[in-house]
Image 1: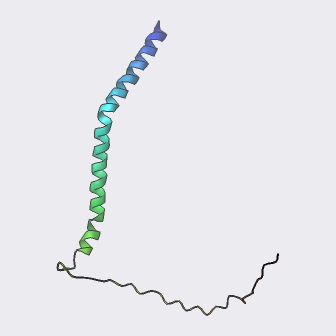
Image 2: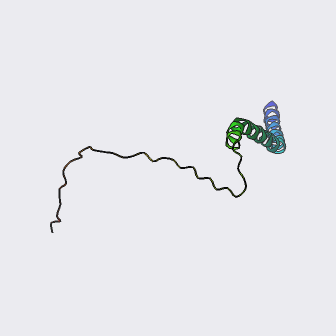
Image 3: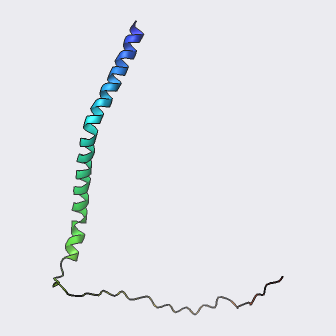
Length: 87
């Protein structure tokens, strides 16, 4: 009889935890998501303030050019060999 009582208690606790998890899991996950979002906003706040330091008028066109590295390769790779197909 004690064995059946133990099995019944285990099943009752299992279903109780399952039901409680259904109620509280969405709340806990949304809380964690809000905290993570606040953390990322705090970390990225410095980057957005750097970009907004320039005062720009509406309609201004700003072009930021990056200089392309000049490719000056004087390396001799090898000689060119012309191949022909053999049928």
